[in-house]
Image 1 (cartoon, rainbow, N blue to C red):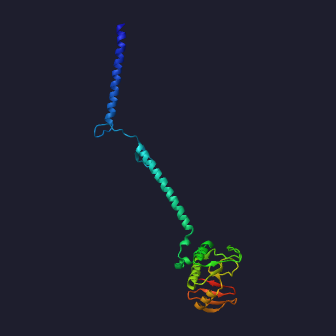
Image 2: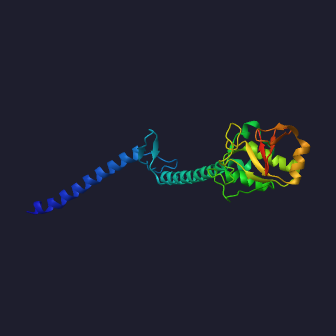
Image 3: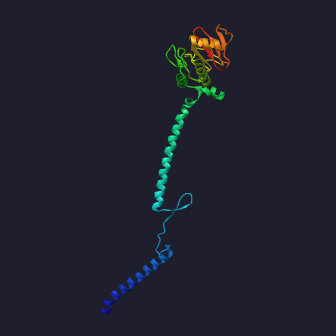
Length: 240
């Protein structure tokens, strides 16, 4: 009876000792497998994960912080790129507004302008334009439209203004109602301007009389090749 009562605590104690020995052995095994720092302390080995590229990266807090920073940087760069693209698109929408018409090269002379762009150049150079219909629709004959006019035509009429120092009023452009042809109003080669004493005198003195057109209009050609037809109420001018 005494043996059985005494054996139970003894067995429990032996079991406790055995468990302690197993735990110590496991700790020693883990310690021997873990890397050590120079001062002998254990260094925790981070869990290694594999990304799609096959590279190994430690899943630590620093790694997550770096990833977050890179994501933010990429988002910021994307925003800057988008803003730059919008600015470039906006600039491309008005390429002719920065063109120096005083130095238009032959390859640029054939570039077509919108009415607003051409009118902006004329007004900026001191020229004016008007229409009997008070409109700018090129499909209406009572309008005065500069839509699809050649860049070279606008450059040459501005050059005429600068050379003559005369007031110039444009009364006809690319609108319908003019004679068709390769070098016509509709193709962007011609403009009509009002008569005035100053411009009449300049054309007569600085151009050579070259005959009479089929409709009876006297023709004058400038040294640069511009052809002026003297119609009853305006000059019909061909800029080649």
